[in-house]
Image (tube, rainbow, N blue to C red; front, side):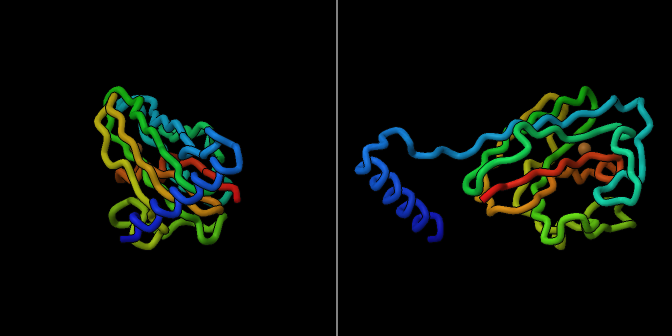
Length: 166
Ligand SMILES: [Cu+2]
């Protein structure tokens, strides 16, 4: 129901723009290219590099997420995610940061972020090496974190800050 209403609203907006003489100006979803990378399974995973860890040196990360661009306008955002690893499964989850700069809730015994409590907005889960996937979500303005939540990866530095501008 929600999506039908939204589509109707978009249609109306498109008609309004066409009438105003700006044909072709209808805004498509913002596109963000995501690369999931690592230094290979033979490289020992770093630890203690979770977002907002005091004094962390992200240059020590052995795996990570690269987002291009790192900021978009609010609205529909499509993430095209590629796992550029040769040998490791990775994923990408979009987390809304209700309180930027504060550590995400963490499940110590599982060595990963508590997704249910962390502001999960959608994900491309568990991509095999070389595989890709797509996620389209409606994002409001704010600060976000893109993370991989395969056990240990977040703490190894596999996250990236992402901004949605008004
Ligand atoms: Cu990963």
